[in-house]
Image (cartoon, rainbow, N blue to C red; front, side, top):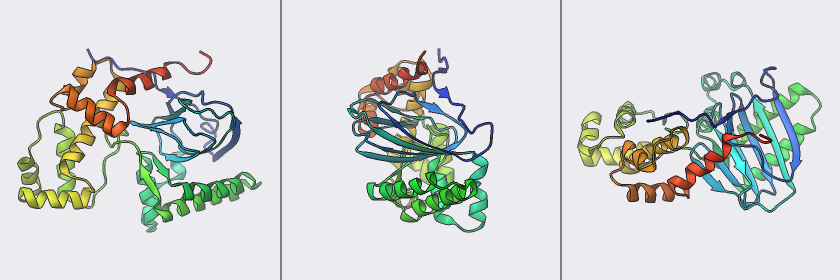
Length: 297
């Protein structure tokens, strides 16, 4: 039986009932807030976080000294103590209601790089160290700005500068974040939609090529050029995303999830999962099981 799990905390943020821009600067000794989601967009800066573990969707990574993440609405995320020994953790969090970041509005005015960053934030994005340090300088300026409108305006300037650098990478898989890959090619979109519907089944290259109206070799080259990865790698990512969702939201066994996600055997599934996520399926499920209770419960 596939019973839904309800252990991902939905946070009611400080600005949730005010529809406003919210920024907070804090120092803390430990990471003690569980994996959660909320309707607001969030940018989160950290320093003194070496050894901590960041979870965004189905991405699990151990951090260095600094971290900067930008996540869109309803994408589950959180930070765990893990191997972090620091007791001087600096965190700056910015949250904004989704209506403040109207992607279609920016798309209309041709701010293409900013739109690309907004699109990527649906999967969660992290930035390079040099970019993080520049962002920290701007975040400090925002914190010290007394005028609320100017703070709001400066944050959009920060997002634009982050977008202009292009120094970011996507974290979560498409299926886990409930977001689809964006492509200008209708043929690739049709193939991706087919894979999204049929990933639990055996998917043949000739069937995908037929959907695109191309030969197998031409389609393989075309797909890699448009999607940025091979067809087989894309299918594995889709299956791993589906598996990660089941690991956190169902009580199915690892074996059931393996076959239900389209993998042919458990050992291959476990190898792929560990290679992509840095931990085994069982370890991944354990990470999320820690979020059943909020702090103090």
